[in-house]
Length: 290
Length: 269
Ligand SMILES: Nc1ncnc2c1ncn2[C@@H]1O[C@H](COP(=O)(O)OP(=O)(O)O)[C@@H](O)[C@H]1O
Ligand SMILES: [Mg+2]
Image (cartoon, rainbow over all chains, first blue to last red; front, side):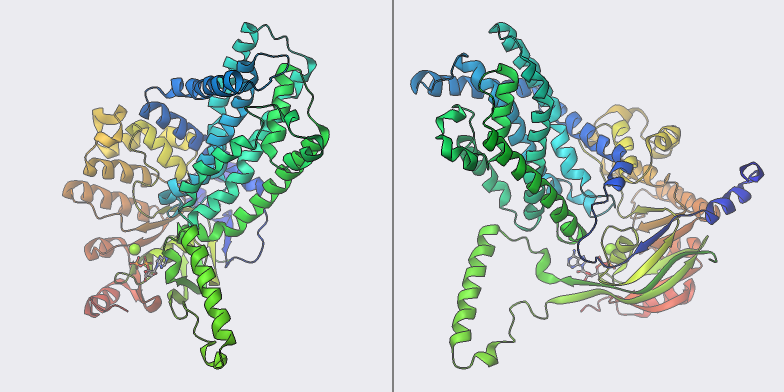
């Protein structure tokens, strides 16, 4: 068959006969997630990530430095106020690395959440002019932050060497908790991104929200400061489970409180799946409203 | 199966005018509380029935398209005519799947490339080279396609040495040329083009027009929105005239243009 396609005319007719058919119709109810379609558009996902990283490192000439400094400065502040002044006990490990270990997933989470929440608005011109699965946008926003995450993690390994912390087998669970922080950022990010399209003040509320959130997360203090019977409720904040798990994986101390961790995992799962469907449900209106 | 490229059946698109208004969560909550209090009071008041129908946003909607049905065969170049707000852009947005119709349906046989506005996806901080890849991918080209067409695109755009400069340093004319160069190298068999010939540079405009003519001659299907009657006449044999979301004429391009020009351009809703 293919060998007969010698002239442009023949090739053209062959192409026309094998054209894909697209049906366009009004939105009907709950849309399927179409994760297969996301896979077909992975080039675009890669490109959005590449664009955001490139632009950021061009705009702020301290681009890389900022990725290093952000958690380090936060670590310094926490060490000063919580470690030295308030004398929060960090157990067997020195307070600075205790805090920094938590700040790595926390900083990633805050940045990824902020980016994904604003992602639909930042990309509004593209959304109103080109078709592609919109899920690509918030997903690329949380993926972009992984570079900073990796850099912060390298510094963390450096600090481990400096403080003479020897990894335990718990380190093998680190990828799981990294994935969980990504899922948490995306889970919340999907909801907020959609709401942000309709309610533009989400953007201004978010910084306050994350500030309060920080205190509801065991970043500056250990989670065993929370009374045992409250920990499962405390775990409803998925970042509590992430930070606890992260600390255990790196420092090898205090394994996560199981009910707390289960609560966190449950919340993330529900939030993420719900968020994906909510996003798909609202997706058709983005181009008209954004 | 025939050789239909596009078929639309009773396509309609409804917009609520308050939809576009960017609300604030706080205001919306306040409004909701205020309205529900108000509803509560009116419901409790003796003439509740009389007030019932007065929904605050009732009637504030517009059918941007209504009962739009037409067929386009493979290889046809069709102009879309209509005054501002007639629904031309909405039609192309539905056909390129950017937005969904409210009613009716459409069938598209083939891949669609859309130039709904040149420069889609351009980022001012990135260089011309980077933007060619970015915009090309956003418009639906694969990385391989862009690579093979890269030199052609650069040559067409006439940006020369500026290729590796951030495009924020380009003049707007130059950005337009680059954007058009990328868009015009799209492969798909169906092209939707919305007012991209609003170029000031006359010689470049000629070049674009002849490139578009070439695309039509290749036997690709083109839907072409333009306010430039001369270029429409050279590109298309057929045109669809839209008025307030409805098709009022579909046929010979010259008749369509004279009908379009005889209509009062100030006629608005
Ligand atoms: N996102 C939107 N929200 C509300 N109304 C819209 C939106 N987009 C278009 N409209 C309305 O639909 C009508 C058709 O618009 P459009 O297709 O852009 O016209 P044109 O023929 O000039 O391209 C106009 O009345 C416009 O105000
Ligand atoms: Mg228009």
